[in-house]
Image 1 (cartoon, rainbow, N blue to C red):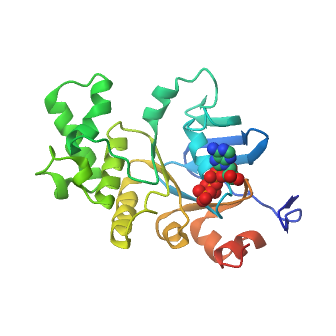
Image 2: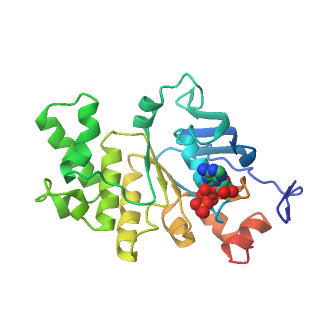
Length: 269
Ligand SMILES: Nc1ncnc2c1ncn2[C@@H]1O[C@H](COP(=O)(O)OP(=O)(O)OP(=O)(O)O)[C@@H](O)[C@H]1O
């Protein structure tokens, strides 16, 4: 098989799966098309529960497309074929209630996008829509979500102030808090720190490392140092193909294929 300039026939690509432990979500033969253009080919990955998996690769390699397919964010813009297995169900089936599914598989986007509301309301908005009305219960969830997102100490006296008054890094942690308030199983993050300064970035990274005790995390990142700092597993994407998947320390130190080696050593293009 040729993928761009790389001939991969002799390689045992994608022979790795984290099967010693429980799998939280997996894709089988995932293919994504934007009109006639195929953006993902044969997407087969298994994600281990309570671990961080990074998706890396050059711009346009399909990382975001793949990530967004996992909770059906591509429904309106692309055709997605194949299976996305979560708790024995195929998330990609037309029978799935997408709104309910996204309570289990939540997403945080690249740019912090809090609502133009108070910090508190950013968290309680969806909860109220889901029928949680009890004030004490709402307050508890606000506190626990903000604590989990490592934001509580910075905002606990300002809960009724506008979320837009927070710094970019704080806004992104608020978006993480807003997502985890719904108690998802899986957190999808699309370059959550790319718009942030190094200090905010490291705060987000510390937060994610804490969060993996309770959530399965899948993150798209352009930052290879970030992938190697925080993730347990890494998948390398190239031209819509997932070419290599391994424990992060192996992928970055002893990649199995030339394409990965070229990418991580900066000899790519
Ligand atoms: N809405 C869209 N309509 C048409 N083509 C798209 C759309 N979104 C992405 N693509 C194409 O699909 C391919 C994969 O794009 P995608 O954004 O998933 O890559 P990526 O690896 O996440 O890139 P980046 O790191 O730049 O975000 C690219 O060729 C891109 O041009």
